[in-house]
Length: 496
Image (cartoon, rainbow, N blue to C red; front, side, top):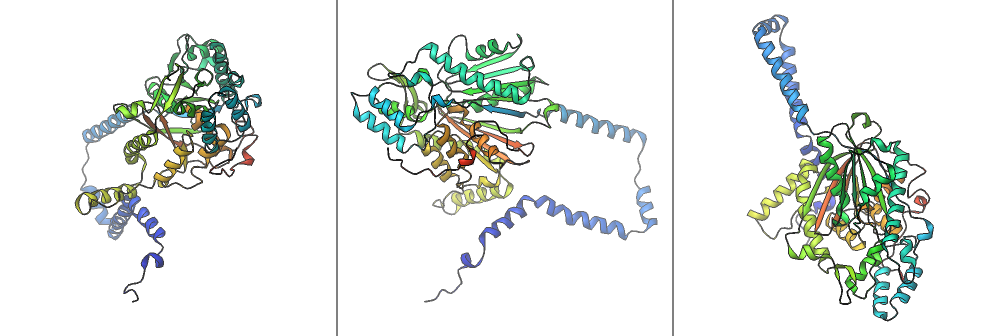
């Protein structure tokens, strides 16, 4: 039998219905006030000159009332502006581009694996399967010490990698911004697994002869999300130190942490992690407002370390042969999903438009009262952000976030291409992704960017930036010589 009612889902453009609903809810205050103001204006226009004069005479003001009102207004304005948080600007940043001599094509990686693990062909085969499905390309890089057969991870070579990555990024940052080393007030360096004495922050101070009263911090052991933790720390310091510049350096030193054993859970990082680093200049100086690229809007941090599984899902330990490595748990993606859920629950009310918040609230009430089987409403974060920088931890991480947040292929393009070109560079990957968006000429004034990073512990951290000015493409940066080749098609499996 023919249906009694037509299928409205086919006859009505539901997309435009939702757009109309969003416009109505997000502008409800304006749409309500306009008719009220129009009605008041019409009533005033109907009054004659005599009636308007009588109305004015009926309002009695004396000098004391005027002075008290003026004082109250000035006092409230002073308190408001003094208690208002200082704006924190990202003036500019620079990413390290590894030299061509450090490049590790698939063939080189697998040849070295066969030679280093000649007594365990199953581990070699495992690494090959991981690499085939990793999403990495042929131009990722490993430090010179790892190119030796067998690898030569000494303290000297580890320091050499740190100096190469950090000093290159710092030199590029100082050149781009025109910043003098003596003008750096705060220095924060984060590197999770390499923590020598003196610290990496002391190494930077020594190299650039920074001031003796500089406030320096060295963060270690905080995983791939440490970059956003450094941003949060810099923001807090800039709130209490006016007219200051903060430099943040994010990197991961691969040399001393390349696993040479046979445990599969520990071999996985060898296939994904690559050289990388970034240096950023943050400032609260009002004079930097015009040339700064971005303004920091929010930082939201979520820590799941109270749960034992979450705490141990990324764990540095020794294998049965006493060789140290990073063990990745099979529960990693499930734990990351829970951490992300907690993080977006916190950040949602801060960034989502009223229309999305109401839809989420209505669905939540409906599940509690009407039908618990209703699917929870997933807010459309595309209404809150124009660009997404998802930590390039691996293809599975990007796939899972794209699915859960209902993002398009273009939204995840920067993350996938960064993983393909540079691999997992840990805490600095977010800045390679932002560089990709800029190199493509997509960053416009007023655009909002959401950076999402995951780290051991287990942590999920978010940062929200607002573009301060339309950013033109430049001839420098890590993407300068290859941006025209991207995006590239990344097959599900690359047969080696």
